[in-house]
Length: 298
Image 1 (tube, rainbow, N blue to C red):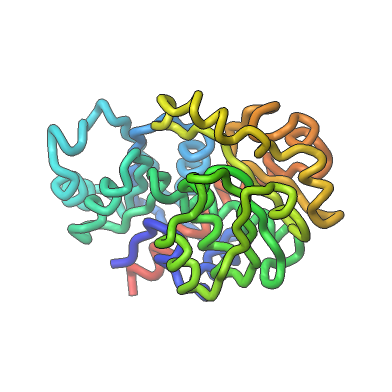
Image 2: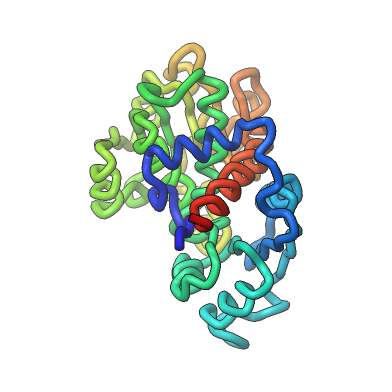
């Protein structure tokens, strides 16, 4: 059974296929008469709406479940939940705190599981990011992506997806917030040796797309004061964008804090593609579900 817990659960060819499907005008109704369970341990705007509508567009019926309704891991183990839901649904998506939760869900191989977000990875966001860059830049191979900020779940999956798509990866992270040796080894497995620096302007040099994310992600609120000090000087402002290629675009997975990780002039400026990026969450998820249903029926 094929799951999607991070981007490199796909091969490079499969990743390109998912992106092609995301742009297809008509993928038919492969989920007709089927349900898709969508579990949310965290609040959600883009993930919930994009996932539910993608399921509907493929002919399926989304069933959204909140954490307090099933209390996984306490009321019932994840493996039992997966086996029960497999009797009702074709697939399951889960937006969780700990990555171990999506691993536990997928372990019984009861039904295909999609990681809608965990503390380690955000692969569905990466699909939307790659789709947006492909549309805006005219292709991915040979292009350069820059990420400024914490090498968090968003950055980790983005770097993997970019490496698998033939892109150069450039990272600007504060000391102590960059990729680990394990992260670098994983990227090396995809033929990528990212340029890593503590200077945003250096990382942005020659970039076709400049990405950033909030300095304090959900679950790390207790570190907000420490992180604000550590990330001083890591705002993506007009000078950082000026260091990138003339046609470079700005991207952010949202929600964004204007004046913190990115200047308002960049977020709301002509090079920003944040809303195209957000809308592509739905198209990318539709492409992924289409592929998962097909590959798991073989």
